[in-house]
Image 1: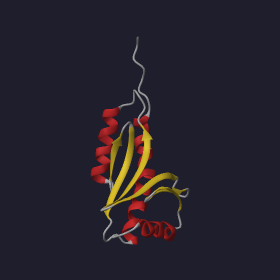
Image 2: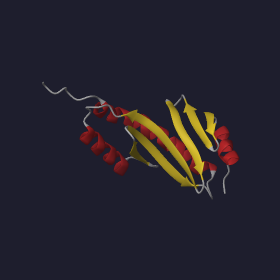
Image 3: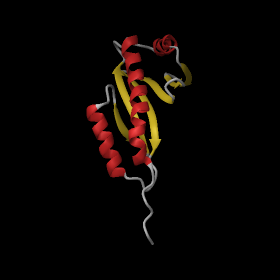
Image 4: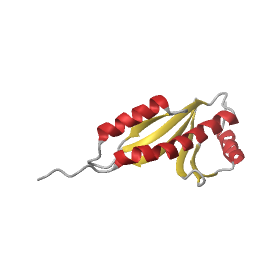
Length: 135
């Protein structure tokens, strides 16, 4: 079983900046990838990776946003999936903690970083407010 020390060792080995947010929870700050909020949580029996991509503004085209998120989940998410957390779009991934090795850990972080930086441009048009209704 992996421990918090193992996860922290992986973060150090990756050479990324991170903050410890609490017991067994870290926030990766990767300025090269422009990802400043990827949270890693060791929650036995899994390691959860989560990053908030954007808030969903009122009046945006939610139908088309959700359709695009589903398309990305089906075709382009190597690790994890997009979802909703409250009124925010998030990308998440989970790995089994028991046999987790460094390569799996790094692959999840790299895949989420790549996905959100590449996909944000595709999602941005759907994250704007639609035209105001006429009174």
